[in-house]
Length: 173
Image (tube, helix red, strand yellow):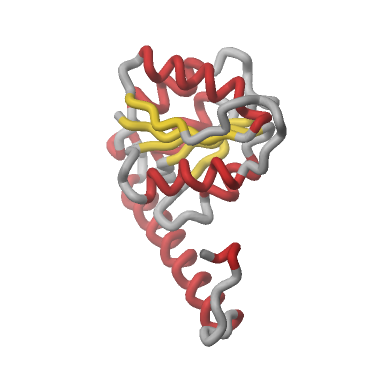
């Protein structure tokens, strides 16, 4: 499986550990940075490209890293087609795939156990199937509603807040 990785400086060490693990498991890794723990960097510069690689289909899954993983999940979830879940243990990672069809995992280096190999290995290797869900139809319906809500919110945003005669602000490109 091809997996995109992105991190800020606070998640760099964990990203490097996970990258090594994924390579050992035979996965192809697309590392989109950052490439050092210093100097501090702005996480959206590295998280968005990792999420976009998944959205474009260049990678099947993505993992983003930060200090807590919260901001990284927020940035990844702004990319259309990405469903990023902030996970802190094996069970939260399993549920993110089984019930929410997450395609990107967000991990906080400061909040996760030193040995996260089991979490990443299980999440990536097993690729939890829909059959593992007790109520597949309910999960499918809920995920469809989430997607409709996102589309509706985006439509309302574009319809009510942007004067289409003006160029888009840089942050909306």
